[in-house]
Length: 430
Image (cartoon, rainbow, N blue to C red; front, side, top):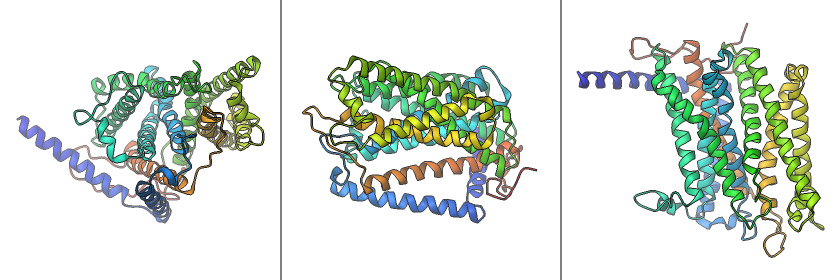
């Protein structure tokens, strides 16, 4: 009997896998062009990374003075995007709010894509990726629990695994017309809440644990990271939800979108408040450590490279807060999308250029090295983002038809998937 059950389970899952594969390989011209664009970016990034591996990190703009750059800036930002899934998980599973519960799976899919990109950005930042196995027990030494980096490696991979298991289980059961197993999903979902907080907290600890870097050595860095995370991730989801409503038959209630926008307003207020508190402490105390913050906002001497980025981020974050805090503004679709784009761009600049470079400039000897990402770094980063978008697109290509009941097999028989429902102009809401 156990053998027969195992064989049947394998047959059911293979039917699900074959049907999913057929589904993601079908699409109209818009879908094919989108995949072709992502493929071109991935190929370009792969070639640039091959050149980096062959010639070393010298092909990037990172040097002894600025040893972290564009790669780690993107990593830090994407950790926040992944952690933001919790803003849907709590109202959906803890408070059982139906409008959010219907779309929470897409937050988990976004978290999977974001964590995958995080791991890739860390990999490309390693000067000798062939030695990565030195971290993997029993072949190497992870130095856990003494190393904060070891904590980061563990929480990121565990958070990825939890979201992957939850999303796969829910979609697989729905494919066969069955409800998910609460004994499996609920504990994992509840575990994902502190883990979502933990992945960004540990990332913040990587920075503020460095006592020799005063710009990062702040106790409010972790809550500041979380506040900005709960803005940037939902901003992406709001845009994705509108695309799903426009080009598929998937019904997403306005109340769900507006509630997420409202939660973003509170998070954005906290983000701005913490930034203001830190700026006040630096400028009012006016110690020698002010030079790092001054370099970001005002420049030092003739060095003003980051100043336009600083004030652009401030403007975009304030603009987004103004849009989301006013109910009439966030209920206006044009203003809502402007707010989402402003949030994404503002947080991206703030947690990229605004976090990494001022923390390393001036260096310990007072030298100012002006860092600009090279073409190699831009191509590699574009390739990694393309991989993330590709994974997210393919997961949506399967998840949406399952949610609509158009791609399922209640009896577990091999499935011929219906016409694709995620493709542009294929299925429009009445």
